[in-house]
Length: 480
Image 1 (tube, rainbow, N blue to C red):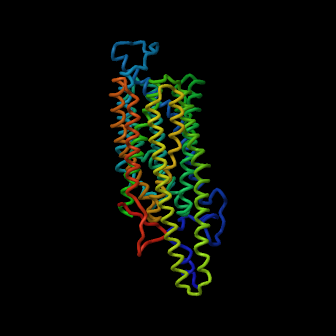
Image 2 (cartoon, rainbow, N blue to C red):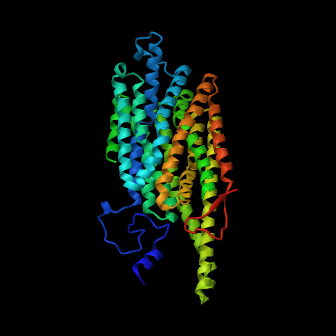
Image 3 (spheres, rainbow, N blue to C red):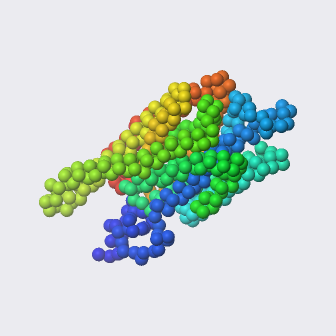
């Protein structure tokens, strides 16, 4: 048998683009561990990158509140702003919400135009180049905050827009994350990609969950809000057509909600419960710890149990066919079993997505009903378990395209995320500004719950189908 024939039998659409000891079925020259392609490199980078982002998560909101507070009282001819402890009023929160909306738009709008080219660039030139470019944008963004914090009279609040625009034009966090997921997809098979994406998301949440706690402690220890921004730079430097449209609709609902949540939640608990930075860090840390446990331990165990059960069923179905001497019949039976297996995995993915969305709906309703910090904390931990829908949805989407198109797909999804970063703040920050003035800020959580309900309803338009001319390796789903 020729080498070409051997390659045709061992390589298909599901074969990883980067071979390693786990995925390669051919004898290759082993590289040193630090040069061996592995999805765990992407897991490590996601965790470190998220940690640097989490360090300034709550401090960034507090920084904006203090800057707006100083601007607000200066406009009313109060010169000694440092002695005024009245920043926790509706007017300042409303202005801060609008400022954060503008800054979010400055980073999201450029992303709509640059993320797809960055995705294509990562397919041609490699993932590391895109990660490096996005890293430069992050450093410029952090630097603008440091400059405004130290020399606000010289630079003014408007200079914050420069940093956000540079971050957006260079891809920012979405481009960096998409490149990491694309690298992980290059190193894994389609069957294992779901779990790897879940572990990556868990690592991301682990970093972003620990970050606010450490950031709050650093701020209180140094008594300087900007100190955490200096520290945050260090980890970064070291670190089917219709079905796709339907899944994109689900992604739109989820990402729009998260875009609105990420800033409002800290404004809400500061205004409603008057929590300190450390308290806010503990809340976010508990949410992320719950997600880490779910994604890195419970979810992989559940997936493993499901796959082992299905393998036992497949083995029982295939066993009687082994005595048949007709190779054609055996091959046809194998294709039928592969088709059934793929349909089961698609249905499994869809129900995982739906379950996660239902958990989110219940959790955010608990947010709105919470009258004290304990109830809000419980709702936050419960809703965190709904995170299982995100890596499962991303895995489903990547399985619907060829491996060579993964970078373009993830780039397109990053553009969609940038669009939601435009829509989310406009809708939810504006709505929160209105509701907080009317003393009804809790109603914002019911609006967010509605987005998850819509996403759950969209998921029921996707179903697995049988096709005579199907590509079993890639799966086949349709929207009804």
